[in-house]
Length: 596
Image: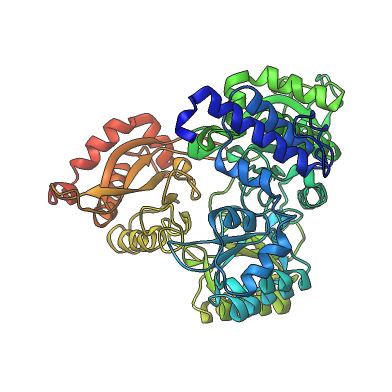
């Protein structure tokens, strides 16, 4: 019968059915009420989303599958059903996999037949007993290891379906949560990893990140966005937070005399960062007091909720509303939501940001507190075993202030380590098979999960990243400056390949006339972040994974041979040389000519 309707009639029927479903969810259709009666106005915390969906349908749009799933059963309302089904060993259907993500659990089939849990850790800071507790949960319910993510967060993998809720219950016992860590929600709130201990910082981001974290957790209307959303707080210190890759970035700045506002420390608002879509956040000219960050972020989100695309997942991020409207229109809508105008300051009245140290997340660094240090530990593409985690927790407790501070570079820091304890920390870390020192290539090595644990990834990113590091360390010992290599498996760009000095994005490389493929990568160069933000430029497509290490060696040899000196970074050299010229120089290197 469905074939008897034309496209317009099908849209009408779909909208009619969706309207009835929404009315039932919000009390609009009581028992015995005529389906022809006008639906009641949606009420409650989900009303803002239902109204946005209704507006989409009324305009002739077709809701994407995820919007239909949210509309049919809110993932929080469905929680008890999900738990009951999981306790029997039943694996989740696609729509229930989506709903589980609201609770922090990701069913990873077909890559693997188990859950991954992504936590929420505001500003990336845990106490030692929480860190050790997560290790115990990973042993009891998962694979006995964890990964540090590029949002200064933790993931635990290999959690069987029956163990999903017990793992979440264990997080609650530790004072932690995974609520809203996946799907169409606001992801882990990042802030300066050295907040409160960095002599250069203008502002301690920890209270701001924790406050926004709690704001999110306690307002259900901020769940179920058109797509995921990232927020970061930068305190102006020595260590980058990558706030320019976030939908909202709050940057601590010092406003000088002569501006339209009183001088002092304010938060500058930047919007629209999404590096996987080749865009970085842009300065809006708006500054606000630190205490106003929550209400401004809330208003920005509500404009996005009402106007984001709910039909096309590829165009559903806030960036695309900004592209369609322009910043002025979007900010005017935010001010309407707030009921007040936001202050604007000319960049000429903002003091330059202090310098950043690209090695500040590695090794020993003096804190602002006399006689104390933070120490950055390098993890092999973010991975730690549960035994290593417990050992690291003991070091934090016995030699530092007890905190474990994760960074966006997939590693972590000890803090509050007295001068007299530094050598002991380094020795104990080494005894665990880890290091506080790293080569120029390994310190900036970032890799997403890859196809070992993600169905979207085209390549084994973590495995290949380690091969690249080993190869460069063995063949290019003269590399004397940090170079960031970011290896990501797909267009979602979890490893943010476009902002690396050298970025690799997974690709299937055709190797025969019959269409056989092997794992490989497209390669980009010249990306940057922090004080030199830039989206990289692609120079090679479809390079087999086994050929990537020598290509990277050739790029770096060309850089070392032609740079003006160690002070010229790889990114600066790429900008001066040009991406195409750099590719040509690399292809003339003996290491590549021999393979040609």
